[in-house]
Length: 90
Image (cartoon, rainbow, N blue to C red):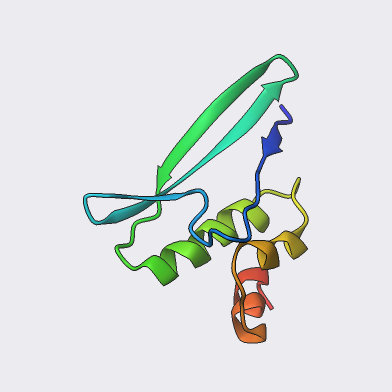
């Protein structure tokens, strides 16, 4: 089954799609299993470090989900070339 991913980018908020739940960072996003339905996904990123949570969020949303262009990672927060390479698996 193919899902459509709905991601809103907010360059002014580098923590978009992240929230801290009792010291552990989580990611939340929406998928559309069909054109008429949507499903909110919330998952633990397994870290209490904000920088690591941002990298794991970017890995999940922009590398592991092929429906989104990897270049969009740059819109969430500025990355150095080495960080971008780490996310993209280079």
